[in-house]
Image (cartoon, rainbow, N blue to C red; front, top):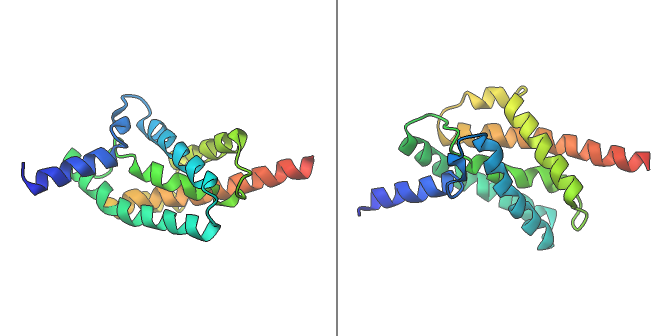
Length: 163
């Protein structure tokens, strides 16, 4: 097996979230579920917000070539099977939650907010969705994660204010 084929297989495996992106129904939602253990793990490691943000940046940077290569292998510009972008963007949503406070309710709320903004693509998410290649694949989900982080923060603060 040549190096190019190995790179294609690795990119396809990572890009599809170890195959979960091949789900015949709602692959983006199924793929985003892989991001939840990542979020939980980052929260429970007790890392500072700066380190968690750096991890998000690294995931974004490595995601660009992974998603580009996986999309190329699948023969589409932004195939639904490529879910690394959802997985990598999800930790960004939860940066607004203080360490150790993340619970099941916050995880569900953040997940739902992210899926809402990833699916509906309000401006500028839709603008970034029009970009081609790995950068476009990663950027629109990152923008959706920023919207979701804002909505999650407002949700958590609103609930705290009401109690």
